Length: 98
Image (cartoon, rainbow, N blue to C red; front, side, top):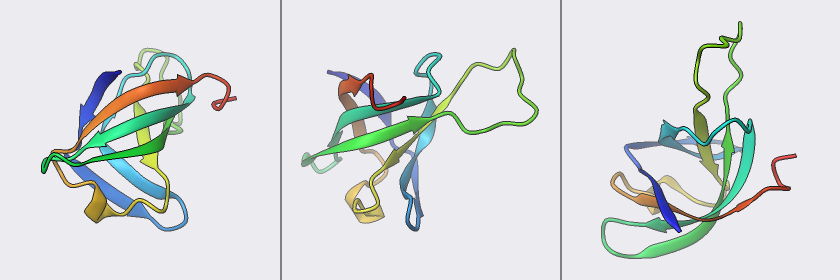
């Protein structure tokens, strides 16, 4: 298990999920499914999944390093992921990004 990021902002997108900021570098895969643990500032924890995706950029820039945006499931609300929450990766599902 390793710490991936500390939440600085969240954006709820109806029907899509809760997008977390900041974005992160997770290598060359365009999409990854992650099992995560959210460690809130109050000490409580929440297990969830996250979809890490590289946003579509046009025109593509071959010199730009890929940055992934994490989205939590739609049933996780903004109030459940306050600023300061740490996101820890429990495991990566290599098959889910295909």
